[in-house]
Length: 289
Image 1 (cartoon, rainbow, N blue to C red):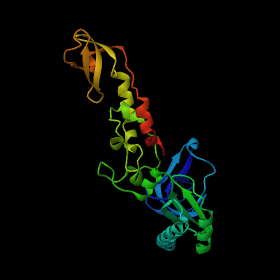
Image 2: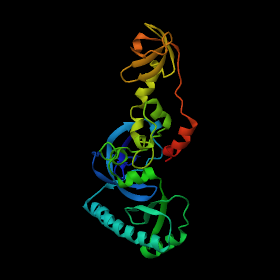
Image 3: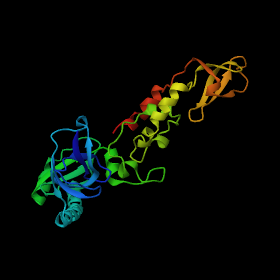
Image 4: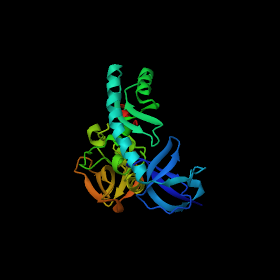
């Protein structure tokens, strides 16, 4: 076991573990720590606690100090610098006629590096741009190409539910989401209905997937052969949440289908959830990051 604090460096960003160096810290405090990017100021997202050694990547960096007023002023000054750097970089991108979209700019706390985040359809030769930026800012420059999901997380916005993006407000890491999840949850495979503003599958498809997976173990799928109180039949529709099945009876295939509770039927042969190849090809892009 090890004593740690969890520190976050951006809104809804990933939480990194640090050694508190014997200090008791509260959630919401700002601290100065050493990271792979250099000295950074972050917010305590997890106060002092013990966690298993298996959950830690050693060696743990120690806390340098609790952020003081001067440190917080420096963070605020860096935010203002980032706005100006964004304008200058955008201008330089236009001058070089590069097919890239600048998304965000970050100064490291110690000003030893400026990171420029951008999106582009393919690879971009930005070597001359980096030279120009290094000449202007007189510090290390790093350009990072990000995906559309990361773009949405950085910029934020409102989802089709009317609430702020999950990735911007509380999701520290993106979870893998698949077309299979949407199919298992009985959703229409319409790109407009299952994709977020970023153009990729909605992150919220993951939230209830474990519940749907458990229900699928005990609920006959569409196409399953079952025994009902009225005889054998084929499941033509099912509602996993309510546990109600619509069954076409074999003895009266042309008659209206009957509805049964999953508890009142016995499974003879289960069906399978299939996704047409044409559907898969059309929706493949939605699974990309």
